[in-house]
Image: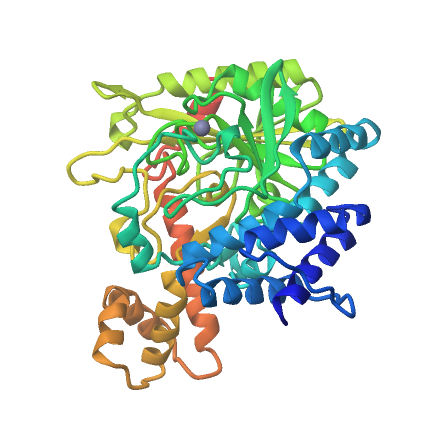
Length: 491
Ligand SMILES: [Zn+2]
């Protein structure tokens, strides 16, 4: 594909996906000539309908060959985002269309924004398809396992460049509204294709956008207009309830507001949700009591989860707030639940809200982030013996039974498979799976491994580790007297 055909294909793609208007053809030709450093255009004989991945791969090749960009992963991502940014409609246009659709039906509005985010390649669908995903049947029900391969690996040349980058403190973080149309640089993603739509939750100003990593269907991020720290309070509950009232086809939740038990971004108040039924939603529940027409259940789940179900918004918020306050005050030294010390508060909650017909369903996951000399990364955190699979924090999404496992496992588990089948491995490969050896021996002791069953044994083995990791984060993991029920009865 020559450069003129390539430019034409980009414009045809934009027209086909309603990103740009046919009347603007020459305008976009000149935009792209500028981007590719050209001063003339040769009209193409035939408009070609080419797959976007192929167009972008050709564009990147052209840019590298003509020394417009360096041949590194980050340079390529910055450049193809710049290409797609040209086709992306202005924020005002997107907001107007979203609001117009929302007036008739919120589903049409989110469908529009989600499709747009994919069409402009903000959500890199083809990259996300590479993620490894499967289901593990546990005694708690189905658990979703995914190995995330869509975040590109860091390129050593990019890391070198990063040393010379000045930190501008703009945008303040990757969630801030100022990211919209930001050009990015090595070490910071380009966001010309990001579009955010303002919404109001409990009289507070938020924006919604879709997650570029799409861990599940229509994975949405809802962030506050201002940059301030995460905090879980009565207002959080009001905002979450307001969200599902406006977008009843989505669940919404917040990461906890403390390090270790929270997500990767603690400094910008935000929620995550989407059109997905994650495993915890289907967990079995035990009825505990009813408070003011709100039913209180305990979930049969690896973590300590309370489910509230009721019709009245205000009443459910009131019960949830009482639980939050009681939990913040709860202390049990025998179970290592230290709610407060010289470092501040350690008890918090990961809340998740859904709307089911006229009923609100409110899940409150009890969390504690205490750490000590023996458990520097946290006592209610994945145990060291599972770090070969999962060392990172267990946040909102994983709490709900969707494992986001690191990309390195993709290669390592292939090598584990070879090892289990007694295939020859190089010294480097053996070094790479050294950390998995105790686990490998366990698998060998438990199973008679054959070429037919090896894949399932590894997959189930990973699933089992993930469930154990969730159990490690259960604040009542050591409970013998059923202190969880005692806590529930005290509400
Ligand atoms: Zn921010």
